[in-house]
Image 1: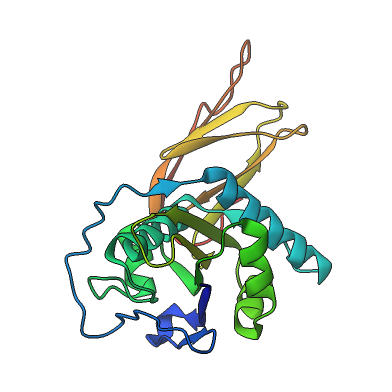
Image 2: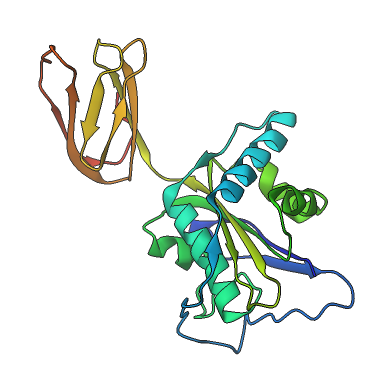
Length: 245
């Protein structure tokens, strides 16, 4: 049994979500988008497959390249939200964009700390491989539109298998466009480590770097490299609400 459903692109600030679902004729979908509300307990012995998730991302970007759309980057918060939703559907045996606790897509990604200007979601159940689920999505206009949408810049893929569920394999792809801000510059030394409050990046061969931080971020940026000192040793930023160079 194979199921597909998609949530089309939404402008998060608009406060509305348009959800569309479809299924093969004659199939009974346990859709609990209304009426069923549990505590979203995810306590079954489900299996994950990171290779499947990585392959779906690769296939998404192959399809985007075919139409000249820029590739999507894997985003950890979206990835966590996607996998948790797949696990929720598997463990609580339902198929919907609404979580078993009533959480919408925007609520689910916000729980992981993600904020963005656009969101979209594809879900599927019963497809055994990345290739088969991508074939299903690409042969559905709504899913295909999400995959190729140029408003999106990043994505999270979540795959879960639970033998005790109706459909076994559950897939979620959460698409987004982050409202993060960029801090970019050059440290003058190739491949220097540029640490910042919240992470680190490696400068390129020409010494340039680019850091993505949430809007309103405050912190320091500090370059390091063996046998080199930098002046200034670090830069401090407060309440970053626009891109910085």
